[in-house]
Image (tube, rainbow, N blue to C red):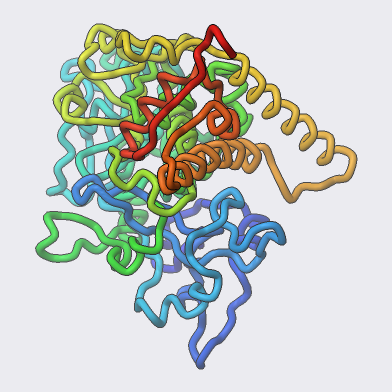
Length: 491
């Protein structure tokens, strides 16, 4: 949460509603004679560590540090969506004094993209003026956007992540062919904080009566003030890399497989809508996510909700056991991609991305799994068995649905609002993953590292139908255990 700063009198937006501000920012407290909150009144974090990905260094960058003091009675220390944080509760109090760091705004660029009837997509304006924005004009205005009125887009640009809000306004202009299309966007080294500025970006293009860039082209004063207020400070000799805090002080304590914080703005709820959309197929995506496959999601515009599906797909692979997954490829969201990203994707070993360009379906060397609407498919023969749902998968999904119904009943009858669907879904899959890797680790460390059918059932898997999945899992994560499954003819 970031309050409006007095350094930007031209800005007029609210990044988080006042009721959330009250919950997110604890009352100022003093310890050893110093305030625990920053002097400018900004919160040092929301509910826990948020982990963004620095693509140059290949590791996590901490972007939020001080957890809320409203601790859950069921968790040692609440993290995003109530997931336990690996940071010990006692370490959060004197963090500022020990590291000499506080959360900073991390906007490295702000820009306006427009569609010109003669030149196509082009960057109309940007700050700083010398920033490299090659390709942003296509990332921030998805292919096919001319058919919709508004959209928002998450994307990746080199070592940065971006968020852009798009709007298409009818105009009585032959030169513009009856439509004026613009996107206003920002770049940051972490995608986990971009949601803070969604409302401001929307105001610049699509929220009446404040459609500044559409109704008043060339008026950049609000954007200039925004950038001056939120811009990051680039450290010298770091190849333009933004560092929010000394990452070496945090990396050992952070389980890099924990899901990051990301504000959900989809009306139906991000994870809830995701699972409702895919239904039982969520169990297929879950297995591909754990195996760190390259997953490409196709959808026509609008692409904003599909960007959330990219994030949710990454969340299916969350593991909170320290040390698990250290040697496997990072499972990172690319968000929206277009043909300009083909070269970059060709070097990626594991990712989740979405596109509005159907031509990607033909580029089979770029992906392992292709998702078209609710249809999940793969061209790789070795992965075909994972497409088939088995009885255990359906039972798992049934339990998830029952837990959701029980949660909704509790909320309605008892008025219990301490939990929500996002918590339920995130924790459900994390617990599934933890159970699998806890069992595998115990078996591998035992005197007889033999994985039996009983072990597989204890993990919540089918000894026969999930054999291929387990073999791939053992190989990918380098777990030294022997898989011994009973003959399917003699159960």
